[in-house]
View 1: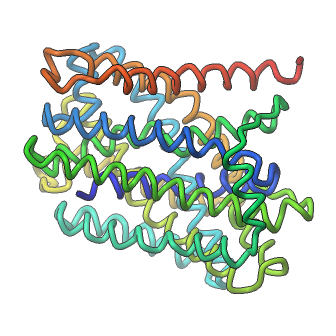
View 2 (view 1 turned 60 degrees about the horizontal axis):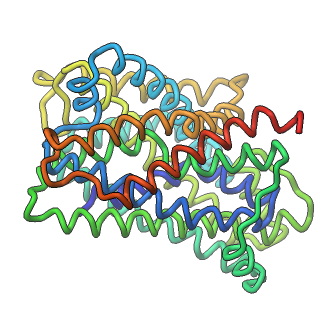
Length: 394
């Protein structure tokens, strides 16, 4: 166990927290219900990645290259790299914003954070790095406490959670795509499969990987729901429209108290620092796998130079970009989540092709129910994207 819980919790990163905060502030509790089907889809999709890793011992990019060729792989990786770069900017901007709220200069904290995440992975081994990541997962409970401190009307929360409704206005549709894109992000499939493969999980122990994936999927959506509840209970009734997670943390102070605001900021710092380690790592994994280069935390620099150079470069670019005063970080953070939602159907299509191939998976191919859930996810995401484009003309 480990990759499933870590992958899912990192999904509640700075961009994710921003998306959930905006959803709560702009739509109240009305989109809470979407987290139920999203949770089901997330668990099914991540279970597929773990299963492919255990059966084949290979990462997702590796399998796509072997089965569909270098040209398809190149375009997929370029899109993934662009989306992930936006996410990496988001993580370091989250570190900057949260430390500013806590009264610390970002010109000190961001370089220190970049150095820490680089040192953690470059100098660590997989087992030690995984323990640090699992410990970081515990800090997400700060958002559950924030949600309780916000004193929501729990009957209203339950009503919206169990009563699906979706407005066709463009803002609501974009937020919905953002919720899907940030909760089931394309980088997750690549990272969990690569991490599970590197961990070396055997078929006989696969049931533990399944438990790991289910726990991770449930936890990430519980935390997401409490972020929406926090902002829905405090900012939405006052008509306070925010554009970032740090604005949410600051706005909570007069409405829900200083402790709620501080917990929200601390949660943002932990999430950003956590994801600033994982996102560059995931990108380095997938890029190296795609082109047949050696990769892995357990390998030395001499054995996998491209992997470590790429990881280091992404950290430097992300940290430096977040400190540029004119960088439109809020737009980058939010749009990166929408790009994730648009890219997701492409990744899922290739995953379905791979996991239903008996030459690759043998008896461990998908069940009909799993295929149905993934196809519903693909079709829903495509429809929502089209509706976003045509919504102004409806």
